[in-house]
Image (cartoon, rainbow, N blue to C red; front, side):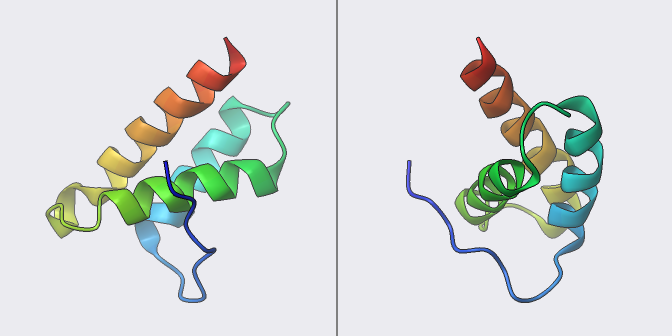
Length: 69
């Protein structure tokens, strides 16, 4: 899994996922959540724009849960 650089432009799919996942995983640092979310966003860059917020959040949640297990 390649790590993505943190975006310099605000991406709605990243912002919404960060907001919800930081509440769901308060024990994980914001920087770590940001790296996971941004990496997921980069990996999903070919997906339909309208589906990105849900896809990014689901993939990031899955990875954060797997890391916690």
